[in-house]
Amino acid sequence: IKKIGVFTSGGDSPGMNAAIRSVVRTCAYLKIECVGIYRGYQGMIEGDFKTLDARSVNNIINKGGTILKSARCEEFRTKQGRQKAYDQLIKEGIDAFVVIGGNGSFHGAMLFNQEFGFPVMGIPGTIDNDILGTSYTLGFDTAINTVVEAVDKIRDTASSHNRLFFVEVMGRDVGHIALNAGVGAGAEEILIPEQNLGLERLLESLKRSKASGKSSSIVIVAEGDRTGKNVFELKEYVEQHLPIYDVRVSVLGHMQRGGNPTCYDRVLASRMGVKAVESLLEGKSNYMVGIRDTKLVLTPIADAIKAHTEIDEELLRVSDIMTT
Ligand code: F6P
Image (cartoon, rainbow, N blue to C red; front, side):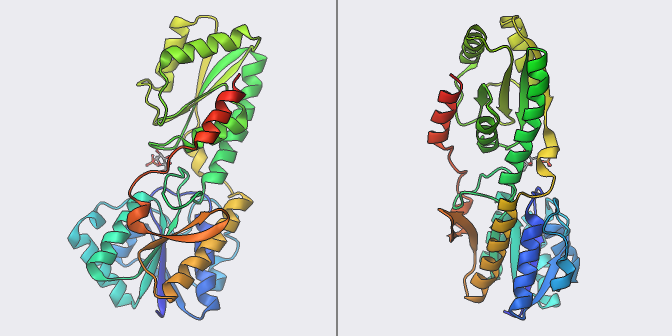
């Protein structure tokens, strides 16, 4: 392998730049050429490439977003689209690529590898932390810290006005952001897709918490929760059935995807970038670099995309106890 392509794909996440920097610098260190592919698979199909050297990635370890831009690409889902992408890579002399992204991006990489025997390596980059084979995805730590900071601020108003707030957080179909940030921010209730205890229980719990002397409450709602009601409908429901509360809603939205990565995400990205390039050079392909028990591990991409990571049962129990 003489020339490695690197790109970001799918939703951006803090730490992607640190991972790009790591891949580029590892290539420079090992005297291999590195090419940045812009706008994910879309840029690959269009041949939107730029050679990157160690100096091209100065001062980006601290930045959110991705200097290579990102996209979700419909054309790459087709055989013709992937053929175009392959032709562009061969024309540019790229021998292998590192994809930084989530489930959809990995699925594309796996197909590409199977069809053309092209060496690929994945680095998990998504705030959702939903990829099997790694305890952390890049951006998750930053996102939960962003949520905790926002909820701390909302709590000031909640407690000053004796209000109940429903705070909607991201996470697509999983509740990892909600559960972790909810415990970290001391939320009274956390609604996640993995555990639907029903609206009755929510009312009971809010009643109990008021009776026990709490004057304000924060309920964290994962965007994918399965109560069948969105945060605005939950507000109406509680206002109707429990008029003791003055209720407000806050949807945190895309602010959760931005901002400077935490030190944890920067270090993890740096480690994963080195591992991804070294693994390709060792002849490994079609794997994702992950972290388990502080050690970096490789998981076949086919396994990583099989299912979502399960919710942490122990943390669920902790959250139940903390809301007493
Ligand atoms: O996968 C990351 C994520 O931010 C999810 O948490 C969220 O459901 C989705 O992307 C939002 O996607 P978009 O930026 O396309 O609205």
